Image 1 (cartoon, rainbow, N blue to C red):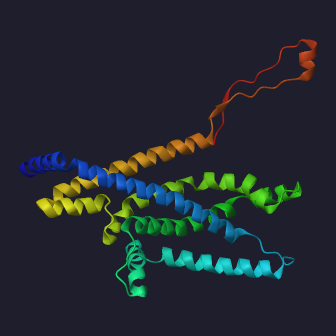
Image 2: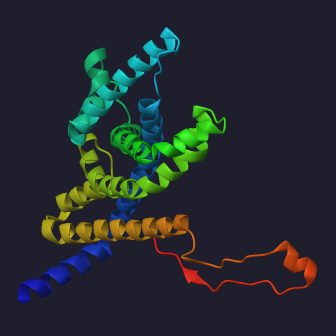
Image 3: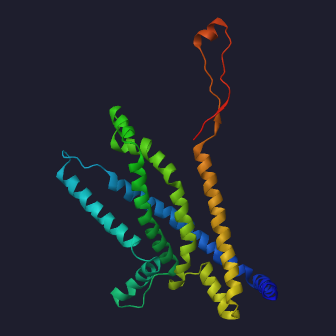
Length: 268
């Protein structure tokens, strides 16, 4: 019990003296995670759509060749960034310029961190979007084409709205993963929450109390994001109840009373 009370005392003292630094680090983490996830979703959306564009026998040879090349580039990009650790990707991006140019010029840590996390997220989202598009029933695509819609119109008006709704959970997972995985950006001197923790520990040597604070802050950030994402899902689902009203034109003309069906709950 003495050790536990001492831990609470150390945590309270550390927070009272360094709370501003912790909060600044947390804000840097949240900004990086949200911006990189948004950019990664855009990258993944384009890459995922590119992988689902149909190639027909009657297409122009140039179009076929271009699509094959672009798909090959996307596959290489996805496999490389999904198959290597983010910390090594950060090292590669940050130190590539001085290595290949034989100079001391390096990227600023802030744009380098945003670039690495965004590209990494885009690689995962590319496969998520591709799977989401293929999960939509083919009958909807055939129906859209039957009424004269082009492939672009079908994607934007029929397929993508459903795909985005279906992949919201995965977008949320990527956001939460990014909040945690941005901790590896300390390797390129980006000052996020974990880097702040290392700096504070270097001056007072209270490693475990500081780790308790940082762990609690990461937990709060991820839980809040989960709650917001679930709220977003419910908003996109629409109301659970609705009124079904039937109107008869003859009833209006004859003065008859319109029948209103009782409210019922729609099972999803």
